[in-house]
Length: 479
Ligand SMILES: Nc1nc2c(ncn2[C@@H]2O[C@H](COP(=O)(O)OP(=O)(O)OP(=O)(O)O)[C@@H](O)[C@H]2O)c(=O)[nH]1
Image 1 (cartoon, protein in one colour):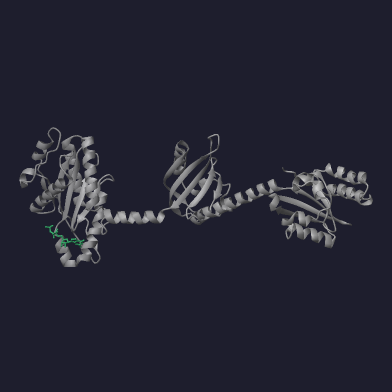
Image 2: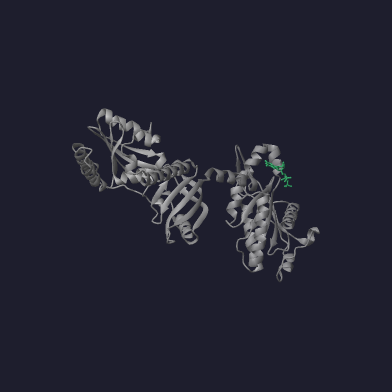
């Protein structure tokens, strides 16, 4: 029913006016003359009619009959406002009267409810009335309305995306940025104008992690993870990323829809809490909790590798005296200075922890020799290094202080003892070292204290251990 056409209004108007003119100069009573202009006008695809100054239909073409759903014979001579009562008071009414009064041409679009349609209407003043021609533009209006609604929806969705606190970014498979919401601007500092069309790699100082994640995304269609990114000012942030691959109808990857949440603060808080839970606040060393965790991991790893490990229980000698003489603060200072010294004695895979007070524990899991004697010698050498760490005096503000320690050592190479049992044994060995006069190291001897026997797995380890009860005095610290 779309009767829109490309006929230029000027051209139609010319034909129309010439037809009207013919009608005007011919007496109304001459039927052949009355029909001629209507025949001409029936050839025009626009609907049109004429009205006299009393608003009566004087002429009507076929298309007007179609659109108005009324026949020519039914309307000619009738007053428009009586036949189309719903038009009274509408823009149509107003504009027709204006054309007549002001003797001017008017053009407008009008929805006429009884016909349930939109019409584009041109009204031309004539000497004895008005010429009206019109098109049904309902379909065009509907599609315009649908487009406007779709645009409004897109605008609304885009504004929702902008309201999101997260960064929402779309980039093509070629990495070029296609969409950048206000959340992204807030998070990274770049405006959309600065980034659109540029490579998403600009967010990465080291794009290696990005390429790894992109590979997984292409394989699986989705990637979730934490990734370090950089802001416009160069600062680094940690983002929790959720990326989805967008495919076209043929199933080909087209773009990546990314939602990135800044978790830098959250991570820092989590790290701080974790640190408080697992590290000693005075020295920064792992605390008892983390020590037990690492020890249990060390036990299972040793059992797998059939290699020896050692647990060292270190207790400072006469630390109470230092506290009592110089004050708790200086005692703290010594403990703080001792921590890096102990760390320097071991390898990265080993652990040094503070149990509390003046007690430290070291887990040695660095690959020792498969040969028992050799590994024993290696462990002894590390114990010697630890004792040497005490050789240098501690600078406790105005004082230089010398300290020594007693070390208890227990060996392990399987999971036949629990972490608590091993700690107890190392503690007992440490007491043996104290009993031997302090500043000494002592290997755990199950017979000496009557405590539970060590049952390491493997050939001669148990016998050799018994043979190797070592309680050796160490070199006296200088000064
Ligand atoms: N400065 C300081 N002292 C602490 C801390 N925690 C415990 N202590 C003290 O450390 C001392 C530990 O002394 P002990 O190990 O019992 O005895 P000691 O004087 O070292 O004697 P031996 O171990 O037998 O050589 C006590 O005086 C505790 O009050 C701490 O965080 N800072």
